[in-house]
Image (cartoon, rainbow, N blue to C red; front, top):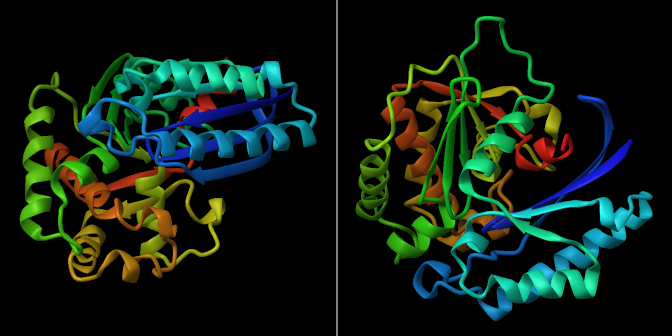
Length: 299
């Protein structure tokens, strides 16, 4: 059966169309990504910015056309929104427009639902040993999710690459002091978590993790075969943060492996990832370029 899933996040909007049989993913037809920055200024205003709504509608119109081209019925598309929409007091405006203009039913899911479906998606076609006890790390634009104990324990942190950037990074390039504030804020939230056993392994999903790995290995254009299942080491992150603190957004946007529209938020994302490594005492994470939308394919 051909299915489609759309993950509308705080920074990006992702579409996957795939062939699914029972609980098996048999073929990925297409993977699409648009940077819509739906969470623009939401940390300050608590509302969706009009420009962000228009960018999102444009991306979803394109996705509807792609779904139609691949014979996916619009009513069967799973479309969910996460942190930005959870926080937006005016989210109904976008929900109504999406239904009226495109025919999509847009569901806003909780952080716990996001974590669970991300867990299911991230492990898709990822070979792990029988004794593995993985912990999933999903760094989004507005929040960061941790999932462990076989997906039974889940926690959503109010810190993502866009939120951290808007809250703490006020210079271009950012200063180490600004990144330190992100670290301190996140550590404070992490210390509220229930105890987490040392992950075996730590699995990182979403745009921050895949982008950092792509920058390290200078992968351009993006190639899932060079990303999915590949480790990103702690010792590779510190040089990247030094690079980000010595280059402007315009300079970073030219780095191989970095989408230009992620150039402003990637320093914060890298600091979040490094802080989680520090907290969990990890030297690396296995990168998965699967995530929430892949979990949605099995609903």
